[in-house]
Length: 209
Ligand code: PRP
Ligand code: URA
Image (cartoon, rainbow, N blue to C red; front, top):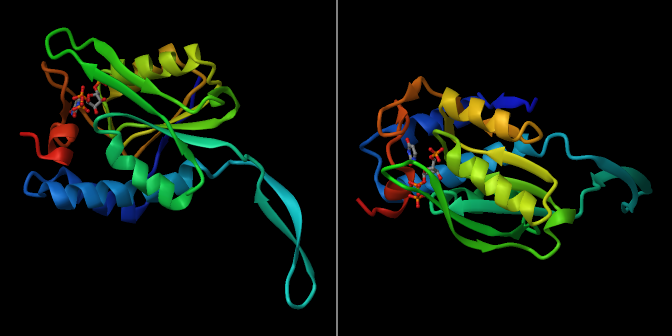
């Protein structure tokens, strides 16, 4: 069974409260989402393995540690996942970026894939799949399925807010994928929105409603 990590660092919780606020406009919403993604990336990468290297300081040789994972990719689920990419890249600037377009059919709530462009060596990379909202879990589970069909094996999911239903669904479908979120909310409403949540992440990020 995958691990669910709820990252309750005060800075993340403070910024998440501002993101949730309906009075927060698109500019601030985008900035805050990027900041939270950066802070969360710190935790998501916590158990990346290290290896020893020798570094010549001006004084002597120091035995130091560097991350031994050389290949990392961040994969946003379009559209709303785009809001988290910049934050991850601020911590891991050499990561490659792949894109998966999945939208939720508003009637059936079923995920539809409409775009996919990934690094060619996806199977050799540690992947951080990002999407702020894990609601029914359908979009994320489908995106992971698409990644696995293309050879991915090492996947972590990072989101802002999850519904209990989404976590349960994702753990059932992909027990190998650890989940990192800033909050687990109460429930889904009858339209599949997270309550209290933050509303429609894509629309708030891009000002489309
Ligand atoms: C939102 C969100 C997730 C999905 C979550 O995207 O960003 O991808 O819904 O819902 P689920 O867990 O029930 O699948 P949406 O389909 O609204 O597309 P958008 O990002 O293009 O707005
Ligand atoms: N997608 C969103 O953007 N928000 C939700 O609450 C659920 C799905």
